[in-house]
Length: 384
Image 1 (tube, rainbow, N blue to C red):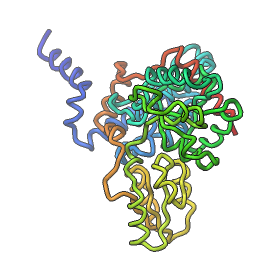
Image 2 (image 1 turned 120 degrees about the vertical axis):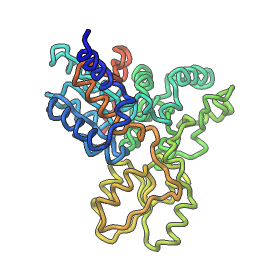
Image 3 (image 1 turned 180 degrees about the vertical axis):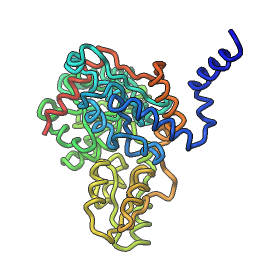
């Protein structure tokens, strides 16, 4: 092989080496990302979650909540590749919806490839409930209560394996915006709900429905007996909550609310229901990411907000609504660190590998998990 060929091969290899991408200037990364988007056209969809950093969101085709993004991408007839700038469970949901059996059939068996630019972009909440832990908990509680009358509910922010568990056991998936409707659906079919992985969303939703704190024991997967509960507590329960939380929303405290009310008279507190009860109860408005955005969009100029959710989203709302006074509710910088792992070098690396036929970080849910996950998701879609 001559020197020229050696250099060409070395460059081709280096071009797909992530370490090389990390040395590139921002302008070059932007140019190369734009080139791939132009070359692939509508066969490619880049999805950006609301919590993603601005420099990445600038290159996305769609921005939104995780489930909403997956739905929009799955409905595209032209799309053959999804690059999800989010976290692992979101990419799994995109694969579930884009490659459901009827969609595969309509494309002659061709899969939509789903790529996560950095496999380390996980979710601390989703990671707090492993499928083996949930199955063990189900078996253990079955020795104390009748699990035939327990409806498992998993938050959309969970691994596909947990969605499949719910599908197999007569359960369902919920989002932060439909959690109450889903719990009502569950109580029409059973005596209790087993809610995971986020205890705060489960508790805040059930409290609004008149269920008391005493009727909501928390199951600790690391406790040796009954998830750390007395048997009587499980027998008296209406909702059994998993001991999990979002590391971002867990940071907000009641004293932050008190401080803002004292320093900014007339300010309104707007939070996500993944916040602890002590904060959620003090808020003027509590709701999903979509509701938080709509609330700000629909508020008159001069409205003052302290918002308890992810920092990038709050800063974006602040920039987009200069006519309002918007603050981040916590004095502590609080961002989704795993989401933040996806940056321009990872995005460019993933896109160029995809274009050149050497795809990296493909997310593909197994056939069995897909089948049962879709059962749980379809139950959710039927809830009004």
